[in-house]
Length: 200
Image 1 (cartoon, helix red, strand yellow):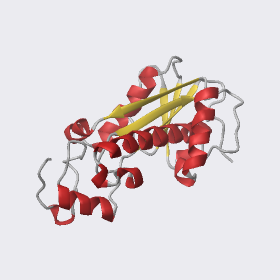
Image 2 (image 1 turned 90 degrees about the vertical axis):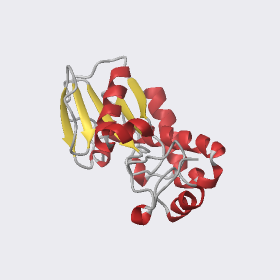
Image 3 (image 1 turned 180 degrees about the vertical axis):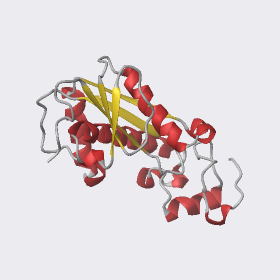
Image 4 (image 1 turned 90 degrees about the horizontal axis):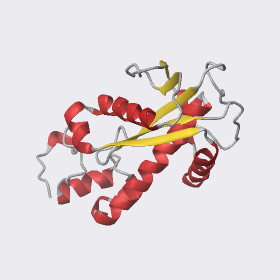
């Protein structure tokens, strides 16, 4: 069972990101502040949920959260500052958009930078431990999946409606055949053996 909070007497925001391991597309971060007594059996680590349950959970979170926000960091910025810094930057941007200022930030993982006006706690596998982080993981995942599905219409040969930009065999074969596009992260090893790529 997921914990409602780490510090019950303070305003907590959960943060997580999606798309860190992808070859293409943005990394998407989310921040969520849930009501103190929020509870819903559907919420879980987004990776353990099927797509239809994630979409249902997204609606519940967006309707019932005290505050939520989603932020995108595009591939060009990822290439410039690296994926870890981009993930942290995205979480900071999501926190900046919250209409309620958190006093505590719970972050999935083991790396973060101090956020002004709040203490933060890095929680290993936090999306499977705390409701607010699980909620953030669901929003980050569903918003990113929707974005990549939309981009699939522009670049159908990469199969982003299925792989969402992750390094599947089919995705890498398409990169080898068609080259990379502006949504690919050129600082990543897009192909085995670091084959030279050309932008479309």
